[in-house]
Every structure is written in C-alpha cells, then in structure tokens.
Length: 392
Image (cartoon, helix red, strand yellow):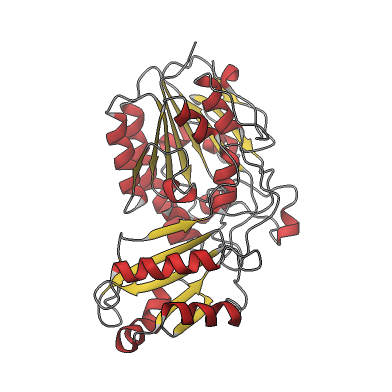
C-alpha cells in the first residue's frame, strides 16, 4: 500500500550542517553553514524548523520535536548544485564539473564564442552578478560587447540588457555557449542567461527572465520512473533547469525563495498524486556566496514563516522532506560552496513517532524513499535506500 499520496521535497539551497569527513580535500576545514549563522546571529527565530528537529540535529537546542531528523553525507565527488540534486534522485557522480574561478575561461573558448556570437566579450572573471553589471553594464549598452563571467560554481554566465540586446539574442548566445561547453575540457554544469534592465550604474536590475542551460543527467533518476508510472512530478524554482526537464510533468519558475514557498503552498491546496520538488536558491545565491550570515539568517526566518503556512495546510497522507544540496558557510573564507553534510527533516501529520535517525551515507535516500512509497522500481545503477519503514 502507498503510504503517502503527496511528497513535498524542499531544498534549502546550501544549508549545510557540518564538514564531511573528506572536506579537507576540498579546502574546507571546520565549516558548518547553519551552526555558524546561528552563532553569528546569536540565535534565530525559526520555531517551525526547530519543531522539525533542525536545532537538535545541529546541537543548538534540545527540545521535543515532531517527525524525524537526520544528517545525510554526500557520496558523490563535488560540492555543487547539480551533483547534490542528482544524487538525491539516485545518481552517483564520480567526476566533478569544471570550474574556472581562478583565471576565468581559456582564451581559446572566449575567442571562439566571440566569433560565433559576433560580439566582443568583456569580463571573463569570477564575480557577483550585481558587481559585474556595475562594472560593465554601461559599457555593454554603449558598445554592444557581451559580458561573460563565472563564479565559484561550475557556470558560464552571460549578461544581456533586455532592451539593447534583447532576450531572444541573449538566449541564442547562451545556446551557442552551451554547445561549445560540452567539450570535456570546457564542460560546465550550467550556462546561465542573466538578463537585466536599466541604463546606468545604480539602476541596473536583473530580471526574472533568467534561464539555465544545464547538462542533462547522465542517467535515469527517480523523477523519470515516477513520471513514467503516471505520477505527478511538479518542480518549483530551478529544479526544471537542474534536470533539463527530465522526469518533470509540470514546472514553475520562482522570482525568489519566498515566492517559491508561496507557489508550493498554492500547489498544496490542489489535489495531485506524486512529488513536488522545490529548490529555494536565495540562501545560496544572495547570502552564502556573498558571505553574508545576517542576510542568510533573515532568509531562514522568512522561510520558517512560510513553512508554518505550509504545515498548516498539509493533509494526513502528505509527507514533507526538508533538506539541502551542499554547504555554503557565509563565515568561511572565499566565496565557494563548502563540502558539508546536509539535514533531512521528515514530517507528516500522520506520524506517531519522532526523533533522530542515524546518519545516511548518501543523499539518494530521498529519491529511493519517494520511489518506494509509490511502489516504483528505481533505475539500475542508482544509489540510495528507502527510509519509508522508519517513518512511523
């Protein structure tokens, strides 16, 4: 018998809870995204997350909880968005995606991209999206040059003014870049179109017309088999882009993490059978990479308020899973992700038990639990195991 009719899996992008045993190999020592935000802010107003066990899991509180909480280790090589999400759905990634954080992209790649797009490229360095616009936005509008930049992630990003370059041109250039960066030596996880408006410094604003061109998952995942068996697989936020639409039946783009939760609450008011898979990116993009623990803490508090709204409308046969895809300790050096374990908070109104479960060896328990619940066989060569029998 299927235990839950609907499963809501919400990814708090980058909310790590402590260093992985191999984190030193990645240059990450003593990292702990959640704990260090809690300490920096001298506590957080997150009653719903605490009720689900996050405080107990991280050792900052000790109080009665509802549902089950546990830590997940990452089995795959890497500490990026795509690796984390793909592993949740069963894929074991053994080769990390390329990053070009230190020196920008190779001259050979830049020259070929200029030739194929018919525009000179400026930037070509690791930078925040807002800073690169302040530096080059007026120049791009005046000259027609194209802003290309990267970050600590495995990404190639192209900025384009919606009025002077146009969205269709921007998307076309990104499609060219995606084709070029499928070569092993240049392969990045995502090419991202970064449209903006405004005509001068201080007025530039990135718009919600962002589009990610990701590498397709190299194998079939839990999403594929759920869709094939007729279940709904609803994505919110950048899940659609992370999986290149593979296994998705319905997709919703989000303007912010708060908007993503509002969309999730609206979906919860509908009747469906299957999985609602949500990514809330602002924790990572706005606060983690920018090393802003105060902003990260405020974002967690805003999420917690929306979480309360979602909990109030959950049905007896709903299951909520709150997790993360990697760490991004805003108190650590640099701007890169941090190699960390992540939380898994599991709750259903029908649960009678509660408490902490032992640490899992991979993120794949999430996809396997969903597949087991709907009596669907996971694809071959996937990793994970089901937690369904532990949720009593």
